[in-house]
Amino acid sequence: MSEAGWRPEVAEIERRRQLRARMGGPEGIARQHKRGKLTVRERIDALVDEGSFREFHSLAGSGTYEGNELKSFVPRGSVEGMARLGGRKVVLSGGDFTVRGGSGGGGGGLGNELPSNERARQWKLPLVRLLDAAGGSVRGFEDIGRTYLPDGNGWSQIDVDLLSKIPVVSAVMGSVAGLPAINACLAHFNVMVKDSSQLFPGGPPVVKAALGYDITKEDLGGPHIHTRVSGCVDNLAETETEAFAMIRRFLSYLPSNVWEMAPRQATDDDPERREESLVDLMPRDRRQVYKVHTLIEAVLDRGSFFEIAPRYGRSRVTGLGRLNGYPVGIMANNPRHHGGSTDVAGGSKVMRLLQLCDIFHLPIVSLADEPGFMVGLESEKQGIERAGAQLVAVTCQSRMPWITIVIGRLFGVAGQCHHRPTGMFRRYAWPSASWGSMHIAGGASAAYRREIDNAPDPQARREEIEARLNAIASPFRTAEATGQDIIDPRETRSVLCEFVEDAQRVLRTQTGEPRIPYRP
Image 1 (cartoon, rainbow, N blue to C red):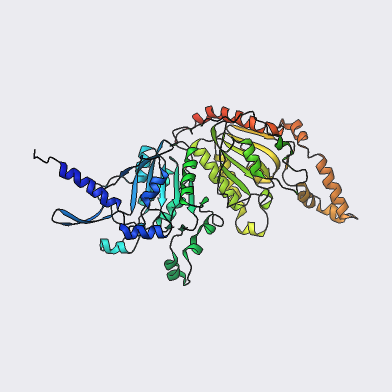
Image 2 (image 1 turned 120 degrees about the vertical axis):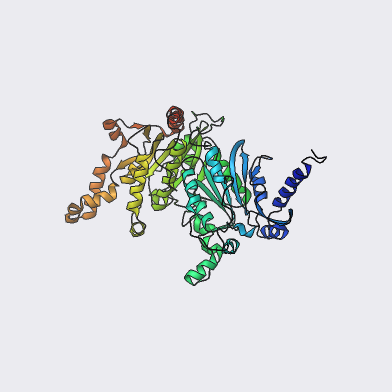
């Protein structure tokens, strides 16, 4: 053995790591900071438990040589590795916009190490994508000396499969286009950052070439589009730091994979806690509205509610929370928007939540005040019937334990989507509840139309009919005939906590891959 041993090669490892850590160089880093964005390595440091990141592909990139001596080095446009979030291990993939705008390209061939998505699949660990990449670039054609047939599904089939096996989170941290834009939505939860992130299949130059008009990145694919109108992104963070907090919190409710149970957290919130305010929460005059978030916060463990997609489909509230420390999914109608009627947007939120809970073994809690599917011309244009059929299908195909508290209205097919006829299902009602195939007011005008029209005083006859029907609409009459349990609203937290405790033995039998794959 030589006097130096292998010390020169060991020193070369460190030298190359340092070259990779420089990313796109001082100018690229300065441009990133000027845009108000962190670099990918700063993001990773801010997201993960301190000192826990272990990089893989740590020496990957393109080097130029004189003989055997490395003269220059351009790193890959991504940083990948494993780390811990809240003590639990995850796989991370982050786009490095300082290197060719994070564009893909290169790679392939024999001997390649596993990419982050395949490692997450094989290790059965959650995957977090920090997206700041433009996808493919025509510059890549020059690099390989040719064009190519699009075959990205060779990678995407892994990303699709992951959705039925492990939690996947995508954070849109900059201008994200091409395949990374699709990966933003191939996730169980995603988030954008205010003023610094946009999402589109092709940016303004592509729009100009294809459609002939000029538009800014923000107007084309900013958060106001995707968190309010399109629904492609769930949550909006004010800062990158807030986005990282959302990622950590979302994952804290879920198991690391479908073969494990969701983690329980210690709580000092009494499961028998009775909230006096719930007795008077529901107004007798239904033209008045209440704050559904007040109800949610009152029944869940204090401070445990994490809302998903709060700016989109606002007639429905969806999110995650805890009951006696156990993670649950929770959904509720919001009477402050469309009277709580389920529209296409609200229904899509509900379907994603039901799938999430079914895949990762969380009980679902429904706080139902459902006036029915949204009616009207705009709803018809959006395809409310097909959306309703999809919601019925997802509801009936789910199997996680499900409990519904009917606090107000429960009408029509939308109302039946708060009920599941199989598996572990439980339903309670408050004395303020009312139900049926449709509202008495609108239903009477339709069912008794001829009688009302032919009456000397049509309005008086309609009011007479409605009063007659309302007299038999008491939930206590239903309870007499069907055994439906009606509870004091102050008992709500208690019955929910008891149900979720009982649900654990059922959930343990449901671990493993789902019968029906997750659909984003």
